[in-house]
Amino acid sequence: MEALILSCSTGGGHNAAAKAVQDALSRQGHHAILLDPYSLQGQAVADKVGRFYVDFVRTAPRLFGVVYKLGEAYTKLQEHLPHHSPVYLFQRKTARTLKQYLEKSQPDVIVTTHVFAGEMLTMLRNEGMKLPPVVYIATDYTSIPFTQEVQADRYIVGHKDIVQSFVAAGLPEWKILPYGIPVNEAFQSRMSRPDACRWLGLDPAKRHILLSGGSMGFGLDGMIRTLLPVLEEHPDTVLLVLTGSNEELQKSIHEKYPGPQIRGLGPTDQMPRYLQACQVLITKPGGLSTTEACVSQIPMVLVHPIPGVETINARFFESHAMARWARDPEQDLADILREVLADPAPMEQAQATLQSNAALRTASLCSSLVRRKG
Image 1 (cartoon, rainbow, N blue to C red):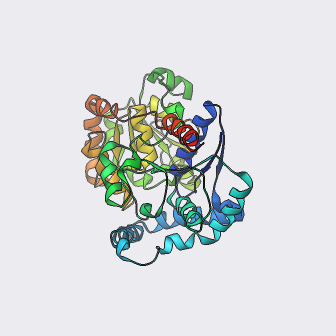
Image 2 (image 1 turned 90 degrees about the horizontal axis):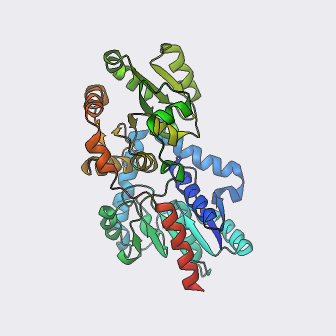
Image 3 (image 1 turned 180 degrees about the vertical axis):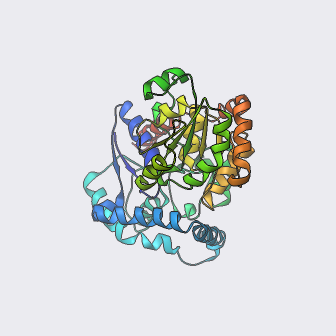
C-alpha cells in the first residue's frame, strides 16, 4: 500500500503525529511518504507559512486568541453563509500544485494531520478530482475552527469524550473514531526511571523536573525564577529546562543559573527518555506534548496555554485528573509542584486510561479503507 501523509510546520505537533503514523505504516510493511504540501511550491514557502504561525503565536498570543475566537464564531455561522472561509480559499494555489503531485504519485490512501492540508484535499474533491480514502487526524482535544471544511472518510480524535465537539461542528458521528492522538512508539517503550537517567547521563539518585516550552520555548525564564524556592527546599532536585529552538534562551539560562540544580537543554531527539527519567513535567498544553506525557505516565503541570485551543486542552486534562493547571504561574506554580511531587500516584493512574496505540490503529484503518475500496 502506498500512503501519503500530509502535515504543515505550524508548531511541532502536527509533524510529530504524522511521523508516528508514517512509522506505524512502515512497521506494517507499507510505503509511506510524509509531505508538507506547501513545500511543493518550494521549501521557502513552507518555511514562511510555518514561521508566520510561530512568530504570530510567540509575539502576540492574546491577538492569536482573538483570531481563534473569530474562527470559532465563523464556524458556528458557516452553515448559514454562502461561501467557504477565507482560510479555505487561501489554500487554492497550493491545492493546484498538490493536484499535480497526486496525479503523478497516485497514493492508495491519504492521511492529513493539519486542517490546511485537509482543506486542500476537500477543494480538489469539490472540483471533481477522484481521491483515494482520506483520513484526518485531529491533534488537539477539541474540534478547531474550520475542521468542518475538511471532507474525510474518517476522522481520528483524541478521546471519546470530545467526539461531540466534532459532531457539533457538523461532522458525521459514524465517521469519528476516538483512537487517541498518534505518538511515536518510543513513548510507549517503558524504561525504568533509573535506567532512563543513566541513558541520558543523569544522576539516578536525584529527582528531576522537566520544564518545557514546547517547540517554541514559551515563558521559561519567568517560570525558572518562580521555581527557585522549590529547588532551595529540595537540594536533591534538578530542573531540566528544554528551550526548544530558542538558542538565545538556552545561553541565557546557562549564564544566569550556573549552579548544578538548573540545566538548559536545546533541541533533543530523546524526549521519550526525558519523560521516563523525570518525576514531573511542566509544559504548555499542546495536544501532542500532553499526549506523549500521558502515554509516558509522567505527572504534568500545565502552564501558559496559547489562548484558544490550548486553553481547551488544559481544561480537558484538568477535568480528567490527568494534569494540574497553573493558571497564574507566578502565584500557584510552586505550590502545585510541591503537591504533585508529594503525591503523584492519582495522576499517574488517571493518565493510564488514555489510549496509546493510536498510530498502529490508524495504520490498520488505512489498510482497511483501501481493501474496502478495492
